[in-house]
Length: 71
Image (cartoon, rainbow, N blue to C red; front, side):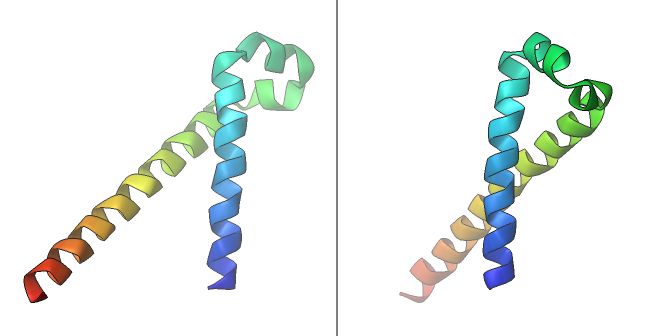
């Protein structure tokens, strides 16, 4: 479980970086050649991370519906 906590912390940091990338692409391109050379990789990470919370929410909804049926 401790390993999962670390994994959950990393997406939050990446999402913050992605928001900066979307809001100020020109600043990041001029500030870091490494980030500017891999925009597709950053977008791909953002898409994967955006899908993960939706999956977690759907799992919670399923678990809540099953508990309400048993109750």
